[in-house]
Image (cartoon, rainbow, N blue to C red; front, side, top):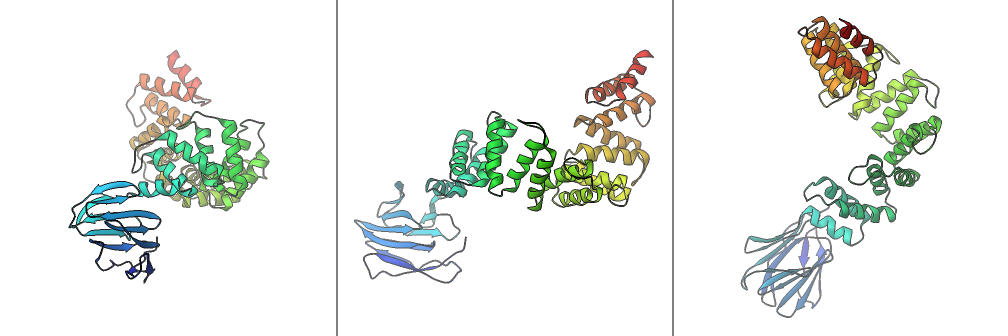
Length: 385
């Protein structure tokens, strides 16, 4: 918020505080009706003499100063009759001191709550995010949902999209796919990129209707054009696999690279895989390794698996079977079937890991459960020995 200095004019019963230069500075100390005070910051200021003191109207807030108390929007803060009162709104948040002792300080959450109460839909949305995440305040899901519903009902696309994601994921509120689809479509129709992406997911994944990959790709393209990294990744996968669009591996690699720039996990791993395989761009195993490393430590199982392969073979980096096993272990625990199978093979063959058929059996069973087609045969061979 821009900061403004104010010069107090005391000659009139109702005194406007005039705008000064952009940099805020404290107004001179003054005395009115026996109260000594100063005001700094704020964009709209007014002074009104009242019985026993003075009222300062600051950005729509009523601050009454008397000899015994400061009253802010009806809330009283006691002070001494001789204290000098300093009112500071130069940082966009209200602070009031008496003889240098802080008696009232507004937080960012207080400011958002006040703006939301006044009908500011963006403040409703932002306050709801704080209440959902517990950032700078206590978690209050019912209040957050009520604020989001209010803002969405007033036409704020970001609130529509946030609610849609909550109902889609079943986080904070019970999952409700029809409601999620409705809200996502409303946000998408208003041009909201994440909303467009969510509509694309409904169409691509066949949620609530038969899959429509062509329509999904169109929505992904709209969101990707707005810089939505997740949509860039989904559109890249569509071009890579020919889902709803003609296969175009070069276009897919470009989209994966864009998602990588935004540090999107799945997009980064897809780009690393494209570099590894030389699909849609020249093969570069060393670059693939470095790209995968960006997300592997954050739980990117496809990246972890690629790093396991690279370090196992010494391709793109130095060979180290123990390090490869660690990457395979990380990926397997994130649900990567191929990584679980590779661990089983390493334990079975004493290849970089101790010979341990119990561990081998465990990882082959895990790989089979995760859908690896060859894990069942490997498990049967161990069981038959």
